[in-house]
Image (cartoon, rainbow, N blue to C red):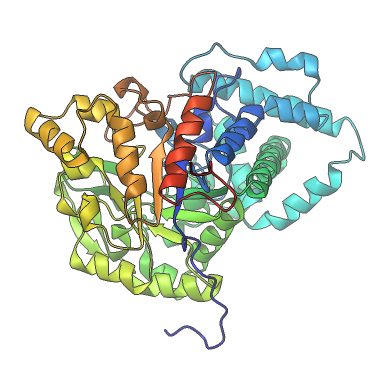
Length: 516
């Protein structure tokens, strides 16, 4: 359908040259076993401001499930309570300063098991403190939060309470009355587990309260946030449990088919993600209302969304449920322009970046261009591994967002160390370098390019090797654990980035160091 006349479409947020850094909050330093939304996050924003960066890119902010992956969340709407800051709870009067030390964990990579235990106890302590003070100054905010988010919060809180009560297993294995959402069974569960559900809802209140503080602090300093939205949802999520008619499930609520990608650079057998696929006809009958609600909620958290696996909206790789690998899948047409038009009409614009990596057909390109969405270019793919000419800077088109690498890549230093001699020679020839400072050579090439936005992972700013890699696609465990050293990226790196950002005219207004 055509866009209604007179609709006030917002301009795309990427209209001027800019630069940013990719760092998930879990990777921030701090004493609580995982990066959080406390002092280190505010210091990180200060560093971005000093470096003239206009954007901070994060991974999905939802509550992590299988494999601790931010791309396998228990909800598309909820936040990750593991990112809660004990320090901020002290400021809110929900934790005594003397209690903070009991929530600390040894320094090092994220220990998700230990963090989960500590943060569950932290929320329980804050909830008990809140309930012990009737008429607390937070009561109005709490009531307002519950009312404004009732469309997803109550089901999510009950879902998490049931998971806790039933041993943490997937809802696919719950007793049939709960799995099938029998009204009488749900009413009984709300009565029995209502207090535990309220505690989970309170954890969400705390997360969004802290995130809004941090985001507001960033915006006041000229730093905006790029979020990340996976196309598919985890099967073990409140969304699939609550909205089974929107997914291709059996009558017994088991997936008929699951999502993945065919064999590629990352995996010889493809990637079997295991997410249930959508019933797109059912979504279309509602005017894509669930999708509009999902994007609208995300845009309350961030300023711009990287739409992960954009090619899946044109056609996605569907694998029969129960398959051992993704090799047996097939391409199935997605909703394409019908979905994007509906989102544009309902939201007044499309503040999206299209992650157009992988097998990209002319139809995928046409879909992206029809809606004026910036695509992605990863410099590593220009020189080694999945080499494609479109990733070379002299082939860039606009609008484009260029990355030295992403969360799925090795660090640039680690990637370079694993290149073949021929690939290394070509990289050095193209970048006019001998390779001793390859991460910054790549950052310079990205920043100098015509791309409207240039982004580097924090690991590349520090020139770190493969030990700092965030994710290995296809590996089920041991990912998402890397953290910045205690000192952050440090003033010399901030100054170097500021100089480069100013040189290539990517500084936010008033940001970056002056030219000499």
